Amino acid sequence: MRALALALAAAASVACGVPLAKLPEGPGVTAPDIAAAMVEAFRGCNAVKTLTAEIGVSGSAGGHRLRARLLAGFAAPSARLEAVAPVGAPFFIFVATGTDATLLLPRDDRALEHGRSDAVLEAIAGVRIGPSELLRTLTGCAMPDRLTNPLAFGDTWRTGAGEGGGKVYLHRESPSAPWTVATVLHSGDALQWDWRADYSDFHQGLPYRIHLVSRDTRRFDLQLTLSQVETGVLLASNVFRVQIPASAVPITLEELRRSGPLGSK
Image (cartoon, rainbow, N blue to C red; front, side, top):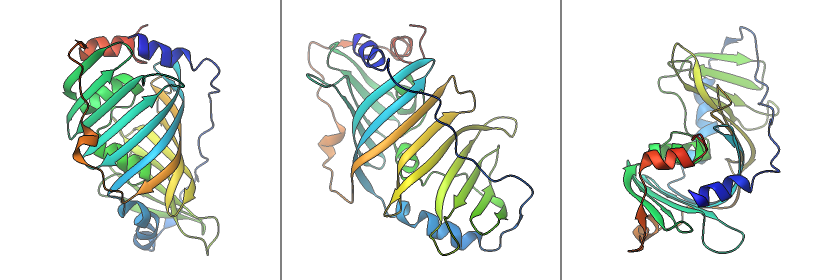
């Protein structure tokens, strides 16, 4: 609706086409140390139970350029995202617990209640992802299940393959540096990955820069920059609820899809 249109129009100057992280190529050799490398790489994110942050978003989704500043709070399985404006009311407030989500568009005085959380997030951002998976993705902890075929590429790269084209890449700057997660390929169809997350700018084991891109980049190509990150904070349950004004007009998921980045607008 109008608020989403304003958010899209505000992004006219956004630069796009950020290059993907360069990953190692070739056959590699068996990596017997992959388990220890994984423990080290995921130690920081595995400790995160709650998180608050400011997230700068730029890039594109559904052919539309995007730029937004989000205030985010997570306490799995709940999430809150508030797209703040330079002045006035937020563009949107999204709250979800598990699969249930509510979206308020204060500037349009419209609301969607009890939608499926991953579908609502896809409608407003292009990425189909639920609140718990979103937290794992932001902290670098989302990875394919049942990793096999561990490979080493020199002293600074390790990989493990999952199902359906999924794969995780670990990297360290030198043999004495700690392992971090560099890239996660999320599984798709026909043994092809569907979308990937590249990670960089680590602080205390957590990434502050994240590049999310779909295999078909027309779906989404988003750069996320985290700041004001706090973990372990106590978040009250009312953080993940939003008061819907009596005057708010309901909006359907289909209307939201048409007006959001994946719509034809």
